[in-house]
Image 1 (cartoon, helix red, strand yellow):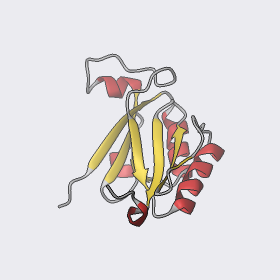
Image 2 (image 1 turned 90 degrees about the horizontal axis):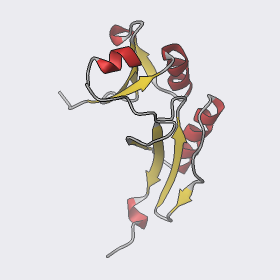
Image 3 (image 1 turned 180 degrees about the vertical axis):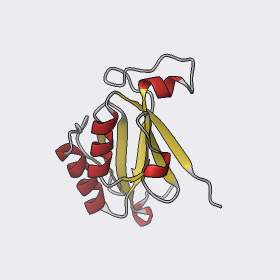
Image 4 (image 1 turned 90 degrees about the vertical axis):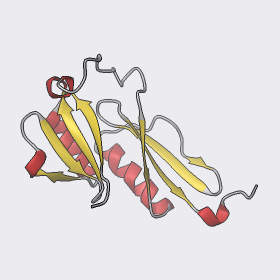
Amino acid sequence: MKKQVFINLPVTDLKKSMDFYTAIGFVNNPKYTDETAACMAVSEEIFVMLLTHNKFKEFTNKEIADTKKAASVINALSMQNNDEVNQFVEKAIAAGATEPYEAKDYGFMLQRGIEDLDGNLWEAFYMDETKFPQQ
């Protein structure tokens, strides 16, 4: 079995967060979803667990970061091409995300970022290895 990645995010409104992540193309797995948590599949190997604050607190003794004010992690997803990067971000904005900075085009890589409804940071990027600077 391939290794899987589960990203756990505390959310203030589980239903709104599920709607947001569905709108940007993630797919809910009802097997791991209840009134306290939702499993949203990005791919066969990557999942985002949306957890109510009470549920999230079951996994840590630390204070939950206010991601509207401070960054705790930036989750980055690779895309197949620049169009997919732009479509992902545009879908996210239409669903309520904000774009915290302008797109960055490095020639070999396009990078764009979003903040979800709770301020969690995501980046979408496409890197063309054939254009990567040679050292």
